[in-house]
Length: 496
Image (cartoon, rainbow, N blue to C red):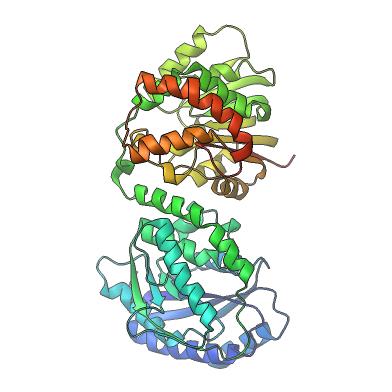
């Protein structure tokens, strides 16, 4: 695309900002004129999130007066994050060469948009996102209460601790300009329809910092002209409760920057050693047996240690077992051939695309952590689900437990219940069950893997785990199921 065709599409959300609109549109018109010197044109997409005053009328009138190109759309009425998300989806339908976001309360100076756009050209390589920061030298941060300052600085600190990565200096700012490719990948890979309040902005900042590149530009943060901030304590609390989940996703995204995640070509030792534990694998199946029924699709069946046990359940009428690794698929097929009794099993080589049938249960047992792009995978799996079908996910829990064993096993992630629940809801499921399992195993795993640096399990350690740790864990799990365990189990169900 030639320079004269460059286009910045700016997305903003409004709710009862009629008194601020004239100043904001006037400043945006000035910014448009200045950006034309950079050979960049400006268009606006404004999502009105259930305004009850003259905001929409003022927007149209001021835009016509200033000759601004603006598209005003009624928002979903589900808060700022969802309003911005809907606006960004519209922006991706345009010919935008960069996409920005801005507040419509007048606290951002639109004239500084030219600085953000220029940062794309002055940085090499070109950043995925440029953030307008309130916390750099030459920045100003005025017109806010002491409590707002404390919350802003506290959010910066909490995000850095949770993600353990270098973030933009102002990760919660909504004044930013991004490449369309980055916006599109974020909307595709993250369950954005589940984000509420102001969560969109810091989730996007963590995503960019973990997976791409960014630049910071100092800005002048101005006092509000009229009205009051719409940030409430319950939104701050809701955001704080997502920190553990965001931290886990950040480290998952960081692994995606490494060639093949930094994993071995195909890990076998740890997985095969667990496959030999009869009591352990029976316990796994027992943990979710009550949720499995009818025609079952098992994704990532491995060598069949779980598959053959599923076939003994009275509630299961047939099993389609998919395994992507040829060597493991041969072991799976051999295990199926050796069995006697139980329901029919069809072993397939490949991924979930290997079948187009629909099923009553789709099971991911210790396999979802091996799938690089889990959100698209869960959406694809939804197409294989009959009405009322259940999605059962059993896997490793808590990113804090991630250690060398996980890396050697090819784990992209460890889960928390809130994260899996969010992902399942984003794929169209109602979450009907979520819990942690094996709390004593979590302590042993942390001590051995994270503290002791153990990277393999000896027969003696496996014997101790199966004969001592696991029985105690089964007794303790009812007490710790909501917050602690080495494994996680989440079940979603589609509407009938």
